Amino acid sequence: MKQWILVFLFCIGSGLLFAKEKGEFLSEWNQVQPKYSVVSNGSTIGFPESESVELFESLLQIENSLYFQTKSKDKQVSIYEFELLTGKWNVKPWDKGKVLGWTECKGQIFIQTKTLLYAIEKGTWNVQKEIPIPAKSSSWRDIVCSENQLYRLEKDQLEVLDLDSLETKPSLPLPMKSVQRIVKRKEGEILLYSSFSGNTIQLYSLPNQTKLKEWKIPTNHRALFKFTVLEPDRVLVFDPITKIYGEWILFDDQFFSVNDGIETLSDAKAVRFSPIRSRLSYQIELLAKETIPETNIHVVLPKKDTYGQTLREETFYSPSQFGLDETGNRTLTISIPAMKEGETKRLTVYQGNLTRYKIHWKLSPELVINREKAELQFPNEMLDGWFLKIDDPMVVSKRTELFQDKTSVKEILTETSKYVSSIPYKSGKFEAAPKVIEKNNGGCTEHSYVTMSLLRGIGMPTRLVWNYLPTESSDTMHLNHKYVEVWVDGYGWMPMEPLAPPRSKPGVTYARHLVFAVLPTPNHPKILGGDRLFQLTKESWVHRNSLQMKLKILKEEGEEGKEEDEEYQPSQKQNRSILSGEDLIVP
Image (cartoon, rainbow, N blue to C red):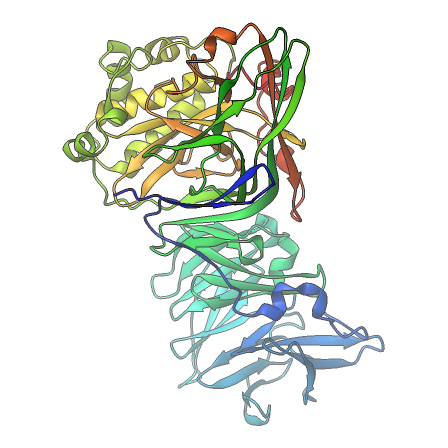
């Protein structure tokens, strides 16, 4: 199932080894492209300087054009068209007075003025019909058309007009208070928006007169006065007032900005987004306390391709031996020439272009536990251990309390995430899962032990992730954190991160970890005692008191810049070791 291909190219005279490596994937990642590239670069839009738009008036989208009612400095009203494909602005012919609402319907544009409702021909903007239906006020009221009926927003209800008979039907009450914007999603469904609810929108069924769902669009709530639906799961915000322009896609009941470097798996089971790019460099500083012969050092390298990180254009110190196991864990064993007493060396042993992402998996509610398959496929990740004690009464009781008779993977992982994320953080000991459940506190390693014990006990493979959890803008990285990955059949390994936002959602983390290794137990096979990223080999261990070593992992940020301090905010008192950047002791 796992295939790894290594192709080595030697760069003569550089002292470094260049490698190209293909990693393990169940599916490929694809960049999400904006439907309208001109909108993704708001600086090129150039809204006419002589015109302004009103906050509470909506835009009108027809095919590849947006329309705005504008007002000049001398109070003259105009209709401006923005061509989404070309970025051009055009003035449309309109002399029927101030627009108080508009919509596209049955191949026409319906425009409400103070005295009349006009049916306008698309393209020419010629008046085809004047309907003697006046507006109830001189204020803007949104209109949408669905299934041959016009719906006009009036306070907290929708007035309904049948377009064939021109008869008024009973009004529909709305579930959201103080609705200010209604936008058609598709036939029979509209979106409701009120700035009093921040950036929340509701999905409303017209035939059933019920609220179906509620979402948040992560942007300035004022900009949502100017949004439209491009596709049922894609919206466009185009606001000349806040100067916010862009597209958002809906995935797993959450909106993601297309401008945020979002990628989707080809099987549509996950998205990753908001990438940060860095040039990563491993530097080892050596001081010989006495004369020593040639020695060898194991160095743990970051994983190459995961759901949350990629590494490209890598170089490796030579002479060295590259190690790769079936789970993608990588090590570099470097050879250090004999050193005299007092001699020092500073070696760059690894470099690579690193990209880290936020990740969001979408779990199907249909998935169920399959213990037999898990034990055959991942026997090591299903074993018990001193740190888990799967059958301990404390663990069994908690598992029964949380899961009861559940077999749904999504439900089990959700219950696990909610519980483990509720355990208060307290750095200190590395105690087994039953003790952590009993005392109800612990560090990240102990949170991980509880997660692994609960899930392995019910039949789900888990593994421990050695990683760097960003806590501040810094030019260095450290091994300062652990969390758990769980195997979900048909998906792959996904994170269970209880200490970084959003904490209680399985398969979702916004921390942009740097993953060094994934292990079925707390122990790395090449690092004696664990919890560090480099160590003398077994053969060279005899010289451990004769050689002083220090590893620095440096990062130089790319164009996205540094923004790591926004993610993880544990208690200052309880987490001084992480905040100070200590790299050898993992809480």
